[in-house]
Length: 411
Image 1 (cartoon, helix red, strand yellow):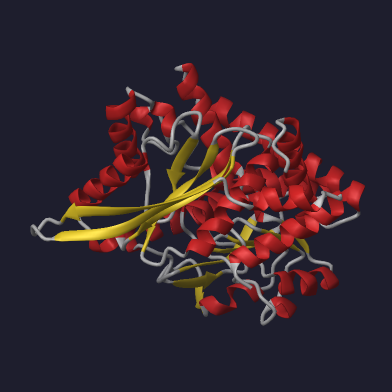
Image 2 (image 1 turned 90 degrees about the vertical axis):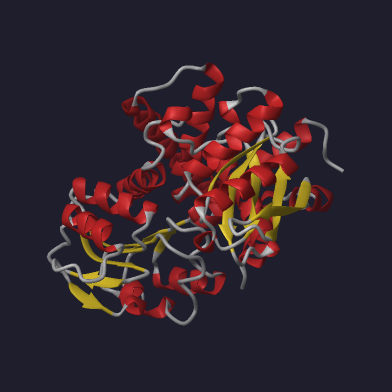
């Protein structure tokens, strides 16, 4: 089941639990606006190249739309639609005043020079500048983009609208980026895991973790979990996978991964088949890489008691059912990985106020939001007698539905 089908399915189940009427349900699913633009740039060799850029703006009932911009060769419209919709529910679960959006450009960033990427970003911004904005739609980095991309968008947008640092988040610190933003998703995963374990009378300390993915989210989660006393017994990334039942030395692994562009060859652990990472023996499994990795083929073999979804949509609905029967507790992505968008919100707030926070304040506020978010999800689980995924979906959908009705938008 692809991401869009799975997201629609979860939405429909939540709508049924909430007893939404069919007209309202239908209007909540339809995107507010879909934008598609052609971006033609001169390449460094003087030839012209054309790329397709797009932005799906899903819902703005609760505030400006928010979501990443990705540069990737296979930008699938269905997936972008699903991710834009997911952002609507995710911002509502986190209780921050945003709706959902997603976008990107169909290109291979690895095949473009820095100056070509800059030209492409600026042309894309010229085409959509009147459709994004501080109180309309606030983009952020995603796959294949980063702080530098946001700096170019900010500069190009500001040529039309005056200096507007709050038009994008995930910016470099020197241009109004927030301290703590880099670690935010991984730190959110730590706080979410603490909140869940607390329910079971456990703490991070002494638990055995397996982490799939050692990019931004996986590496920060690993660092912060090991600092909190958790034992990380296996880690994988695109280069390979390693295992050490006594616990991997994370500071050494971070150093190795930086020098060798991945975890492969790290001497503080034994190499294992990356495909077996999800079924390694552990207490807590954290998929922090791609979607759809836990499916009906491997769900029966998973040995973890808890799964924390740091990636977007890592678990297929079929796997959900198998794992539920086994008694595995899954903390869903729309709550577990919302640390990034929450700190993006803090960045936007700081830019609007023109007043920047200390990193300690950012982290403390994030902990407050993540802890309260978990309580709200649990409350919905009690009210509707459902699992954490449906608890999160009913919470998010209910907040958006209420805002829609209050604004007089229901059909």
